[in-house]
Length: 158
Image (tube, rainbow, N blue to C red; front, side, top):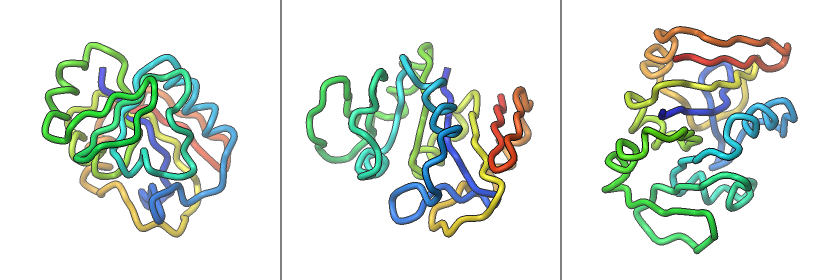
């Protein structure tokens, strides 16, 4: 199953200058870890290059869609951009989590079966957003989980 897991602000903002725009949030971290541990996380090279992200993410198979070589790490599989879609189709029988960035999410949005979203209940200074069209497509799916912590809300669509 192809899943996406990401956090966004109230305007669909997901990034600023190649990293997350909000301070570390332990609840969001636990949410992310609880869903992705022992599964496969899929990301673009810019997400992989985020200096705040540990490399590789521990206790997960890490797959990086890239058009150039990346530094070798155990438990990391680079996949050429030209083969990314076929890789997703071939591996969709596994629990895959697309974790970003915006280009990877946007490119494969229509292939995603389920969306795990942390929504920060405020607006941050972002330069990267989920498009309003994609947000609408996601919100047209069935909301299967909702939990409001006040400053953040967890939602699952699909």
